[in-house]
Length: 180
Image (cartoon, rainbow, N blue to C red):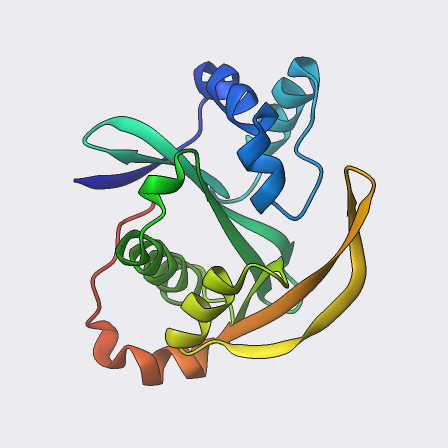
């Protein structure tokens, strides 16, 4: 069974270990290196957020990844989302689609936002194709947008709007995970 729960202070060490790994740097389009003190400061800042933004993804109680709402713009009712599976074997099409539906349900139905964006390295065709299959549209490409380990990477931008989501999941009749 898959569940998503708000990240707690006691889970910072696990996240630190994951983000320091080589696989994290290959898939996350930002700098994942942060000191332990910086991570505790980060989680403390999240405690003042009006709603949860980061969840630990668990399979049968065992942590397997992270799901997040990022780049929140309350004025324009939009945000981005991302996820990371520590073991690439857990990053299946089925789980990815379930997490995606869960984010859309949460953002559109619970938070009342209008738009969700997703970014991925342009050479991450798997992630880009998964979002396209769910109904996301391509918004553009940011050229040489991320510098990681001395190399520049292009970033692909995709989005889903509340209107598009209502067409993709009429009557809100799609399987999703409650984000707690």
